[in-house]
Image 1 (cartoon, rainbow, N blue to C red):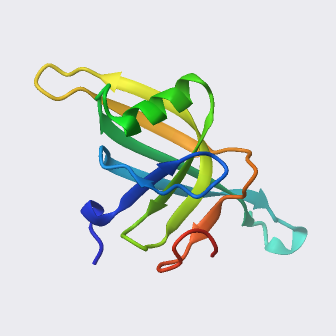
Image 2: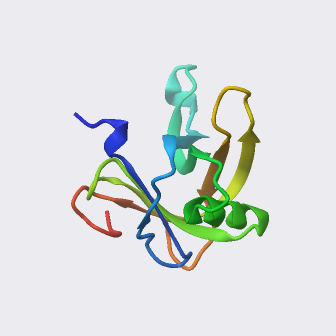
Length: 144
């Protein structure tokens, strides 16, 4: 059984597989969803039919606000500059996941009275010199 504590987010320079582990991260979600194409025909018996088309991916996670943390600063800088950042999200060390260059679309800070300040980050794969790939467990960096 896998638990979230063992999952890993890596970051790095766009254009290469991310290799720096991000420790200041909590409650990460790798969201995968297929768009659908209508494949209904007259022979479908009046029932609408669909097939999966393009895969949409997004990553959402929280970080503690720390202006001296290199990981926090890397994601904030990528957001403010609209720049790509490499990220690899795996479910354990040498585990399965997504490796791609991303752009940060959300960087929202909360300042709740009785809690540590945190930022919610949301990012999506972007156009890059490398294609997004799904990494198989044990496959190190890239490939399917």
